Length: 337
Image (cartoon, rainbow, N blue to C red; front, side, top):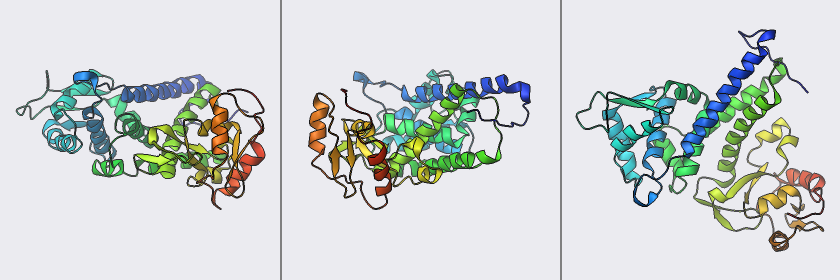
């Protein structure tokens, strides 16, 4: 199936140019997220550092609230200094202000030849123009927040309070609103000339933001949460917001039913076994197992959870579990994992 889109400023012969420009932007977003994930410990023993991620969250908050992409050193020193002290960071704000510039595609400095001092009142630093342009898109901003928090700040006790403090609360909701607006308008638009590869990359970015929003709704803002299948409690990094009904089979209304269409499932077998159909949940909420079991320790895990009740089962989620029973349970067939 091919979609068609009329884009202002582009004619019928401009499809390749439009595709190159869109693909370039998608690539830049991927590079930005890779950069945000790549901060390494800069201290003795290579311990994880909080100073750069906290400073970037502060800067994202300023950018998101229309305060520009560059920040004066005196303001940065006062605000970020307090933030670092309150969250146990070991470095001073001078460090982040200067050393974020080690990635020149992300951060730029002005009026400095090294880390700033108290006398450098005219010094400025902040996001590059290209990065600020990408972050102007709510979906990209929400993904950047998620990457920083999930990769570097997962042990912060109350991330919701942290995001409110820096002015970033509600960004995921705004991103999801934008996504819905885009998809709601598809029926009114004619699409042209985007390859499957480019569309797949754009859809992947949307799914990452949706997964962040799903996980927030399913597991909340605590540091740990319970797997709905095995019942064990895990740090959030080991839990996925697993779709009960396969996402590609959901209607638009079902995809928006974020509180009920997904459940928390751990990465130690439950998520994959449910997805492949080796386990399901019956109409009373009890976990049922397939006759054909996977091999090795996965078979032991299936037998273990087969005696349990799913904590995510309730009247609102039962229609999705019913779909899973009818369409996924035992559908993957026998075999080994």
